[in-house]
Image (cartoon, rainbow, N blue to C red):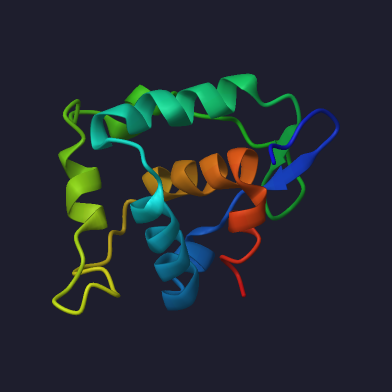
Length: 124
């Protein structure tokens, strides 16, 4: 299921992404996607480009989508995603928590656009 025209997505705030449960559910969803780390930039950019709906912030203001390459900056090999997806010894939790909220927001948007059935569980 993919969202289409006349749909509205609210971008996750830094506070939401800092929440342990939201963060972990986003992390699990990202780890379970069969997308190689070097393909994530293209997948995110394609999802944002193809989305016809509106993206707003928590105050209902239109959110200006940043350039994906600028958000990920000096990491063309996507090593950050490898670090982000690395599990702890149990395999059930991330080994560390990223504070790169702009990057996390793009992952969150990817799921809200391309996999809303998964994204709806992030904030539960």
